[in-house]
Image (cartoon, rainbow, N blue to C red; front, side, top):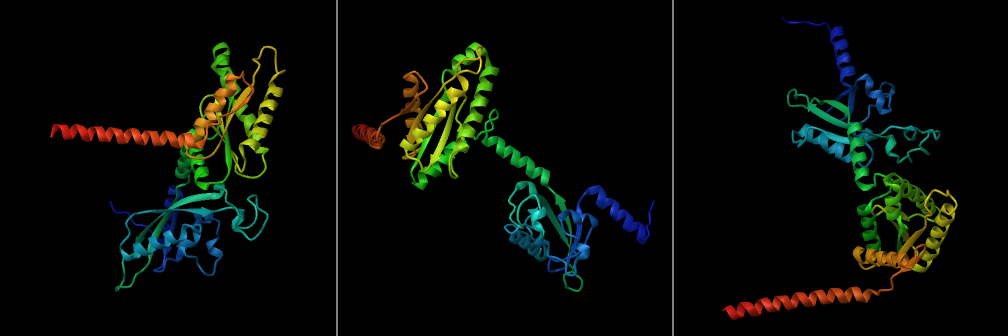
Amino acid sequence: MEMCFSVEEGRVLHGLIEDASGDIVMRLDAAGFIVHASQNAAELGMDLSSLLLMPHIADFAEADHAPEVSRYVAQVFAGKAQRGWVEFPVRNCACNSDADDGDCGSNRSCNSPACQNWYALSLKPIDPDDGAAQGAIGLLRSVQQKHALEGEISARAQTDPLTGLANRHTFFASLRRGIADGQEQAMAVVAVDALRAVLMQYGQRTADEIQWGFAKFLETMVASLPGPGPELAQLDGERFGVLLPGMSVKQARAWTQDVIETFAGLTVESSRRAPELTASAGLAPVEVTVDWTMRQAELGLVMARAGGGMQIGICSQPRRTSRRVMASGAAVERAMEEAVQRAEQRQV
């Protein structure tokens, strides 16, 4: 059965399809400028019906992504598009207006991901008439949920699920950058003393609460440091790492001492039934390699705990020892190679 629609009925049906799909329907001319857009294009933050000159489709993309959108449009018209969609973010907040009264700060200065709305653009060229390009029909579809999910997954991969702090892998990446930077830095490994005993006596829930509370305490202490750059991470179930850019080990010791004494003062009279908690720390300069730096700080923590806790340990092992160990390893490897060569010669 063949169904016929009038022009007006066709427009109504077209509008219903637009509303149902949520896609923004556009028609572009041969240069990529918008000729017509469906009413839901208002969600892009621009009233197209009030414009005398219609914008280029790439004008909606943020500056870093506009060239990519322009290339995609050119490839579609040339019949060389390698993919069906191109994704780009649209800045849609008060910062896009000339008024400086938005929640996001001054005009065009917003960098908040909350003001980024991601869209995917798909274009189908209109068959040319007498060899002249007629433009393209495009669908602009929101993919914000997809990018929000990807961001959440990425954030979870870089953070500890209990405390929300950066995890060990993220902290090690910061250490590598610090070593490559070459500037003076120190790091501390801080831990609650006898947390294992607390776990055995009071249970996992109490240990988790202590761990979470200690993490929030460290966040406050790190936030009090002047200048940007200090980083806090959870290395494992009881140890926390603090990266202190621009600090010598001597300066880091003074700050860490304040951390340990403040924590002891907060917990000494908290409750008669609660365990008395103290913390210890190991310090090391950020140099040589990540493994060397971590080993020095870990040895410092072992020394501090061996002294009874609530102390700061600094391992004084010089860098040349690490180099000597590396040289010894190379010597052993050469000796093994020579032994293999002598064995092969005897067989011949």
